[in-house]
Length: 161
Image 1 (cartoon, helix red, strand yellow):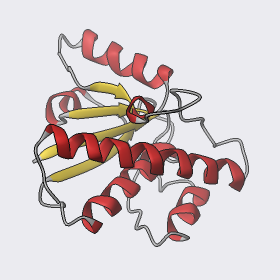
Image 2: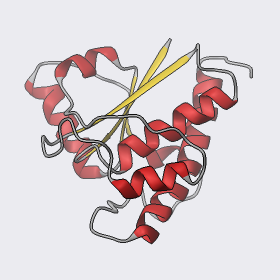
Image 3: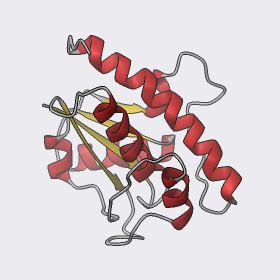
Image 4: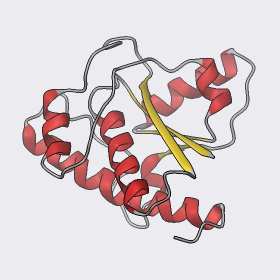
């Protein structure tokens, strides 16, 4: 089973939405037995909390289940997950620090938008201080990036849907 971890700062906006979108797409393609995902934050701001209500609304409007409680990344995650996808450069740097501080290795740490063929930016903007429009924008970015990432995974792991 291929394990994917989505990482943002607080684990209540971007990464739980990415996890929910990924799981939704995997189920829709009947690949749930091949891929597993989770999400976490680099900070400890929202441990145990539900995703932001705007994140939940964004997912619910598209009939995407979102069932997550905020948590912070740890060294077990580095060992357990095959792919770690950060939402922005700051999150990626924080994951790299955790890897280095613990003497670990991980060769599949990426920014999620690296998988998009064309993008103005490699970062998913943090919608936390914005309105619902910011969450809608993040959904569109993640939806596209995850489509490309899932195609990459299927090719990389020789999966035929």
